[in-house]
Length: 262
Image (cartoon, rainbow, N blue to C red; front, side):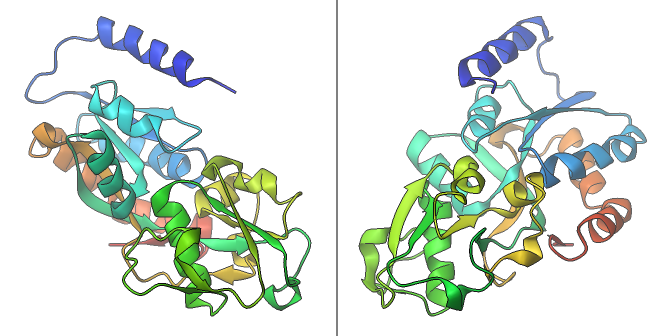
């Protein structure tokens, strides 16, 4: 697997060779995670080419580096995260990054390679959730919404396992990196997995034994540096992503497991 240091070193080399950014650019470097985000953005290339722009896609294996690379100028945009996650990154790391348009919704699921339904999961079972505050909190809110656990009142979008006040099945909640949740299925009774990782691992999102409602704040977005948000290339990128061609591709390719927001 490519290391963070290797990726950033490669980006540094590209940045040194690149000319200084003008008011408008013709090459847009965009960061995504593997799977659906990468597939969707790949389809944008011919759409945005008609507007006079070239789209270069960089894939990242985690949720951290795309914002880091965007903030330091090694990317012009990224498209992989929802607003609560971006808000948390901006608060914790001081990034001057903003969302400029919503894209698609990936309802999170609880998956199992051992049990066909949630009712079959035994008392005391181990359930893996993501170890970042927003996605881990999202998983806990999903479990609460399905009546599995109860959380303290007023926990917002980032509860932790310490906020669980009722756990009738006495589940053991463990936290692991979001990108490793698929691999954890061999070792746990069930795991919360972001849809992008499930699809990338050839897991049918409709096979989740519990699935999040598509409503709520977890729609994904295109993010850029705050200083760039009003530049012409940003408008071109948003229009190309939210085009009829991409909406049709999402419907045909993902058959309702991923939902466009426009």
